[in-house]
Amino acid sequence: MADKVPGFSSLSGYSYSDIRDAAKKLGITSISTPQDVDKIIDYIKNPGAPFQSILNAPAEYTKPFEFTGAFTPFQDTLNEAIRRDNESTSLRFKPKPITQRPTSNTSFTYTDPGDKFAFGMKDLNELRSQGVSDENIRYYASQAPQVGPKAAAELKLAGILENYQDPSSAPQSNPDYTYTDPGDKGVFGMQDYRELESQGVSEDVMRYIAQGQSYTGPVASRLLGLDKNYQSGGYTSATIKPIKQAATDFINTALNKPRKVYTDSSDYSKAPVGERIFYGDPGDKNVFGMKDYEQLKSQGLTENDIRSFASTQKAVGPKAAIKMNLPGVLDSYKSPQKTNSSYNYTDPGDKNAFGMKDYEELYGQGVSEDVMRFIASGQKRVGQKAAKLLGIEAR
Image (cartoon, rainbow, N blue to C red; front, side, top):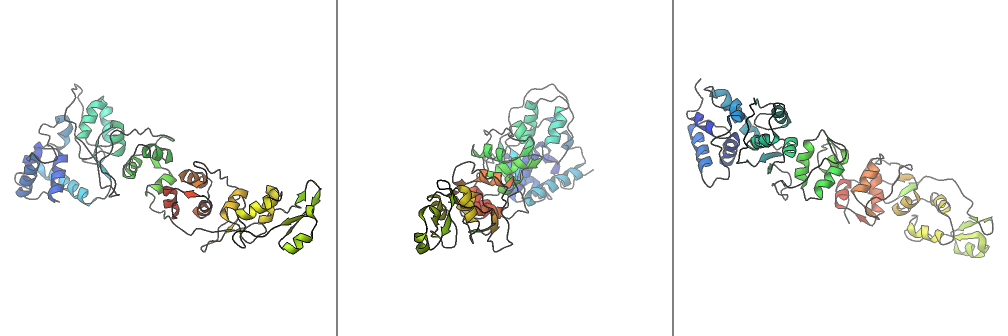
């Protein structure tokens, strides 16, 4: 069968990676003229070109694609791959070709299973099943136009990430990072995120690695922008309307007598010393906060007494609500949400700071982000990543 483009067969001595990259650099979206062929060959042969042709590609590797006289399907397939690469916004990994081919006496058949012009786990498993060593597979995979994330990780290939999302992050992947798939195997979660983050691996590389796992955890998926249905941000509630707790008699244990809370200083001064408590609503008016808590605590009230009294007030601030584990309804201008009185917030990680460990602890208990924003507002500091998810300012 005659080829569509005269001279197209002269490309058969070059790797698909070189052809694709040359076409991309030259702005060729379809190899459709002899001039296109000449331009690509000139580009590849140019000593200053960044891509090196493989003039003697291993026959076993290229056999499914080598010129057989039927160039029409090959040409169509290659043009389709070039078009797909030009239009695709997906993150992909272009391996750095290994120049020294290992010696091997193992014969095998390679059919390029899975995505064409890409080396993935199906390719890796096909070669492994025929007894090909990982050293040899690594060499063959490094000649491919692109390699899938799991195969790249298993073979520890160096290369370049293309179509990375963050313009400020370096596209060069770090071949020296160690990824052990911590936590649940086959799942990319926050343990995986932290392992890579600690080595300076960018989120673009993390997204690529996560896409190679069977599942990405919900928090990691949100953080990496892989959960397309998730939108961060929202109103930060300043207070809750507390749910009234069981009443107490504010017993003075020394006198074994109940005490009464006075809000008027004149009435307070007239009451018996051992039977009176003064509440002056310090701090923000009509909001029970930490100053209110400290005022009652200093007069000998127990935690349970203070919690009971606070639950009778119009509003309670975040720090006081957290300290007393006081349930209530958020004063959100959106749909009101009840706080979950049964959740357990231990302030994990850095104390008095709301970070991703705090987010994970609460998310795991089904606590909404509205409630998380409320809790975060009661902490001294909020980490960058948690703030990003919650749509609030880091501090």
